Image 1 (cartoon, helix red, strand yellow):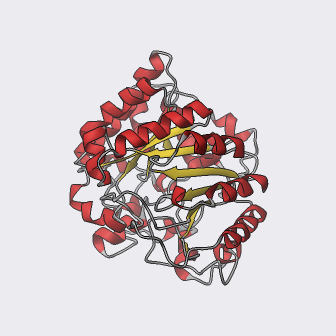
Image 2 (image 1 turned 60 degrees about the horizontal axis):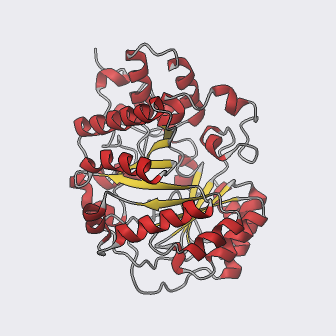
Length: 395
């Protein structure tokens, strides 16, 4: 994650992270990306079942019930292990996690074990009653996926009325006093919706938005040809930065992040340098703390059937199953050559990634995207939009 509001608008300083010792268990949620120990935030895709049919779903969710899901008891065993391991956040996802009746019980159990519980949802099933339950549990955050306003979003979601239902879910969370934010995956089909999404933040008093770059996984692989080209990506990142600053200038301090393309970090730093900003050195220090992509290190994934992955997009590779071994044991077992390399992947990337002056900040970006596009998981990430000159290769 690249915190546009944190970095560009100065809501976080390097000293903010340093005074906590940069340990995951001690850092507040808005500083977790700057932790030094990189204890993994774990995404648990607790079900594959979903009430929508999103065209870019990385989990290839389906309407029918999922077989072989971890039971409630197995979920609690997983949470026990993660809590003891020091994982700071449990992100309940799917499919649609609200399709599981035991979601509140499991989220409350995670909170009782000292973890932050977060939900990633399409928002359409969050009634006022559910929102009150989540508030009582002590849920830290609800991220609701929208990929545009009504017509565009409903086309992405495959179900008419999904936008209005999600908006009602957002309002129910706000009414209950739960922090809620938007999740928006940018591609050619909806890039013109970025501006309207900022308008929606203001209209509905939504405090946070994450703009995701497209990752070629699951059904998202079918949209590979509809990913933005480098020029389009630069334009949309600039728009996100400009709109964030415009909100801050008017006293509306929204939390704005970009996700799944760590080229955004150097790009933001270079923009600050070009503008002569005094914040540039501090931003560089924070980016060095962030360390770039952390798949297989600072983020991990457990699937509905217990299989462990480097992140939620890398489902074709499993490192083991929590039904046979605890997640903590699997995660630290470097006998798996891929997992071992992902712990320090900067040594293994090739091409312009290996020669890039921002490698310590980006960490080679998304290996799963490289593999999907080229067949070589160590090849340069095709979504990197920085020029040869910007990465230090041009004469």
